[in-house]
Image (cartoon, rainbow, N blue to C red; front, top):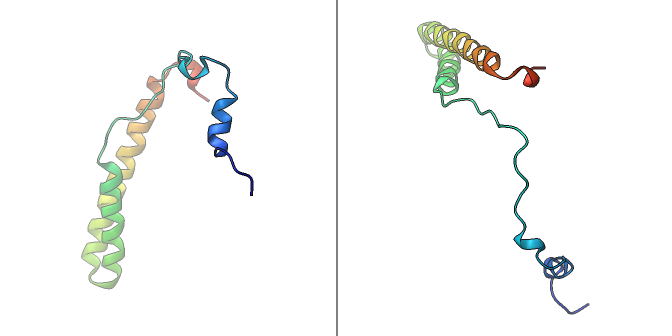
Length: 92
């Protein structure tokens, strides 16, 4: 068994002087993140009600279906609006 420092220490020892103090290069473009929304959670609740309704009562299925349909339509509409707001070079 070889004795000596762990491989991570050996890798750092091979870096040129000052390599650890270098700053990261500037970002080339702005990163777009969607805003916070409750729609994924509400969609999951709607789907859960659909599943529960298949075993308990059809009313749960209907309510869950309405919630799910509403949330998916809103989610798609919000996503389209976010994509339209992106700069032209980001659209595919």
